[in-house]
Length: 321
Image 1 (tube, rainbow, N blue to C red):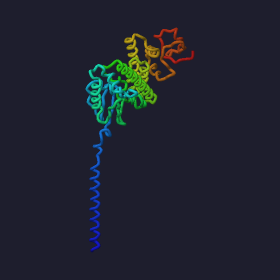
Image 2 (image 1 turned 30 degrees about the vertical axis):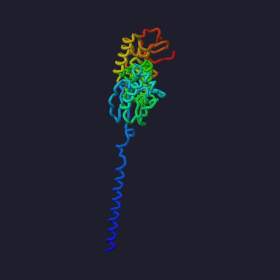
Image 3 (image 1 turned 180 degrees about the vertical axis):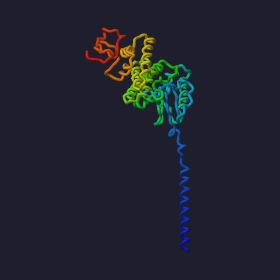
Image 4 (image 1 turned 120 degrees about the vertical axis):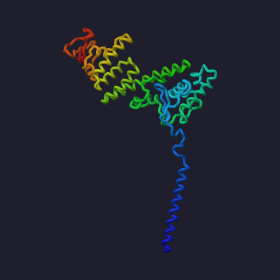
C-alpha cells in the first residue's frame, strides 16, 4: 500500500514539473517578438513603377501620391544615375529657381521618404537610396533582367514618367529626354525578342499580345508591323492580318506622305491570302521585285522586276538571277 502511495506522489510531482516547464516555455515564447512586430524594413515589400504613370506600391497597395512633380524626378535620378548625386548638384538641377534650393530639396526628400515608406532608407550627402533586397523597380528589371522577366513588366512600352512634366533646368530636361529614349529602345528590344520567341515556340496568342504592345509604342516601326502580321497569321487570324496590313499601309501614306518599305508595299499590292501566309516562310517572301528574277505565284510567268509595273507584282518565290 505504501509503495502505491509513493508511486502516486512521484507521478503527481512529475506532472507538476512538466506543467511548470510548459508554463515557463509559454512565457518565454510570449516575451519574444512576434513576426507581426518585426521592423517595417524586414517585412515591407516595395514596388516602384516609373514606366507609364509613375506610382509606388507598398505591400501590394498604391501609396498616396506625393505633393510636387519634382519628387518623381528625384526618384528617377537616384534610380537611373550611375554615380552618386550630391545635394548641391541635385538642387541646382531641379530647384535652381527657388529662393532656397537646398531647403526646397529637403522638403522634396521628405515627401519622397513618405512616398517610399519606412522600409526604405534615404539620406546623406551624396544622397543614398537603400531599398529592401526584394524591392521591385521596373526600369531596373527592364535593363538588367531577362526578356522573360522584362517582357511582362506592367508598364513596358510606355514612356518613362509618362504624363509628368518636371519643370527644371535644361540639363535635367536633356537627361530625362535621353533616358526616355533609352528606355523606349530597351522596351522595343525586349518586346521584339519576346514576341519572336513566343512565335517560334508556337504561342501565337502571346506573340500577338506582345507585338501589339510593340506597335503601340511606335506606330511607324515597319518591322514591328510585320511581326504583328506574322503573329496574327500564326494565330489563325489571316483576315484580320490582311485588314491590318492594308490599314497600316494607307496610314503611312496618308500621315507621312511616303511609300512604305518594299516588303509592305508588295504585300499591299498582292492582297492574297497566300501573301499573309508566306510571311511565316523566309524562303517565300512577298516584296517589291528589284533586279532579281522571280516567278509569278499565280500564273507561273517569269519577268524582271524593273520591267514591270509595281502595281502588278504578285507574291512569288525568289529564284536565282
